[in-house]
Length: 118
Image (cartoon, rainbow, N blue to C red):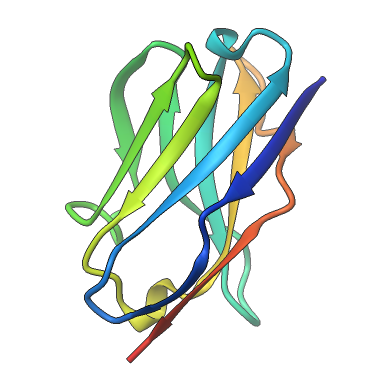
């Protein structure tokens, strides 16, 4: 099992920045990929960014490319999402997720709210 806890959400003005953190525990952190998803009110959950077990080249949704950066620290079993140039449409609950090689995003945190005021 993998247990994930997000933090760092909050209220920020448009154009501002936030850094979300995801603390992982359970199985060996370096054995699974990490990702961030988000869900805005009335919308389906959507992919934001992902990073492999060793880091490597992250993957981003087109809507956040150039503004968001995903990273991980295997020594601290933490994943991060640095969000710059925030827009009102980034307002959502952000979820941290994990999966093992060949698997699906089966492990989820409880989510952290990000609200961007215009």
